[in-house]
Amino acid sequence: HKVEILDCQALGLRLDQVKEEIRVRHPQVVGVTSTTPTIYSALEIVKAAKEVDGGVTTVIGGPHASFTPRETLSSSGELDFVVIGEGEYTMLRLLDALAEDGSLEKVEGIAFRKERGKGNGKGNGNGKGGEILETARRPYIEDLDSLPFPARHLLPMDKYRILGRNLTVIHVVSSRGCPFRCIFCSSSALFGKKFRARSVGNVIAEIEDALTRYKTRNVEFMDDTFTFNRGRVLEFCEEVKRRGLDISWGCSSRVDTITRDMMEKMREAGCSIIFFGVESASQRTLNLIGKGVTVDRAVKVIKWAKDVGIETLASFVIGFPWETIEDMKNTIRFAKKLKPDFVEFSVATPYPGTPLYDLAKERGLLEVEDWSKYTTIKPVMKGENFSIKDVRRLMLLSYGKFYLNPSFLINQVRKGRRIFFNAIPRYILAFLKETIRGD
Image 1 (cartoon, rainbow, N blue to C red):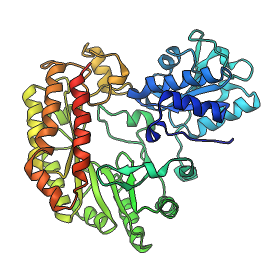
Image 2 (cartoon, rainbow, N blue to C red; image 1 turned 30 degrees about the vertical axis):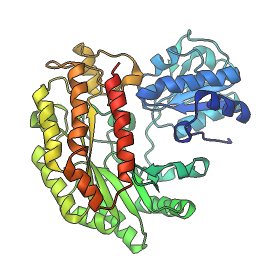
Image 3 (tube, rainbow, N blue to C red; image 1 turned 135 degrees about the horizontal axis):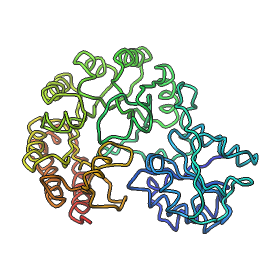
Image 4 (cartoon, helix red, strand yellow; image 1 turned 90 degrees about the horizontal axis):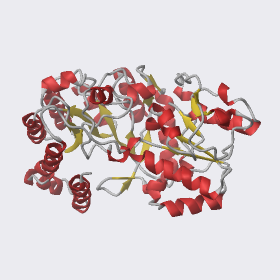
């Protein structure tokens, strides 16, 4: 199959421009990935594709559609298929079945209207009605080394840059699956609870290939928890040093899957920043969300990172149903006191597929049904002790407390990041616009 990729967001394309690209390229199949806040945009692209060519087959995949396949299909008369879960082999088998007039019901991991199963299953504009079929779920890919490297040659690689530093970066996924049980995260439901990792050799080979092709030394690991397997992390660090790879890389970690000596090895191998999900200043909240860590451990780990020279980005979440306004204020104060290099504040958002969504539905806490509002910037559920307006106000307070703090600004000057001052106002203004706008 011949494949082309159009990264609409990276290229800043309007819907009419996307429509023109579809007209010019004349594909037989248009596939779109989608998260919860982008599902309506994905459906708009599907609709646009059908307007250009009524016979084109349309497919949506990604987290949101995977957890709501029937709802997603029912909401659009122009959508032919939903790919559920990991899409590499599912999409390949679906294309094979379409090309060979094969049985769609034998393709694991898809949902479609029964009418599509007749004949070759090509898009025919049957509308929203009809019985929806879900095939057996496709097993998770156990051998991730069997997958080819990402088709970066089909992407606008020059568009992917590090915020505030204007440096190009490559993104690498070296593992899938999450055995942890955070109630606001859908990762384990999407990719399974078993940690599945690529071999260090395979990961290094991808990095070397990408660095050679795209002339950058910046690598960002997109794994949920890059540091889950200590031995694998140390092996990776040793291999980076053995091969003399001059890279600067970042990753995500939990505070309980990393030690100071690991950080030292990571720093020696070029690790420059680690993302930590600290989440809350309240141990009660950490326990209720299933985080399985302590506040004291977070304090210790952030200090270790400072000691060894690795920057930290700490994430905090406010607005869980049981929290009080004072709980949320304490988390904001804690973020400032903890002094990570950067912070990210999010609103507790009940995404489909998460226990938090089930809890919010059960308790009648959801106040917003518009999926496009589920951005983690805008609150969509009330709490037992606060309103949506309370959370919106606290989100406005949170970023100002940290990023407008003189000590933070002085530190950026000290590190020579004058370009950061060009980025911060732009993104803070965008954040304020989204937050103040509300519904």
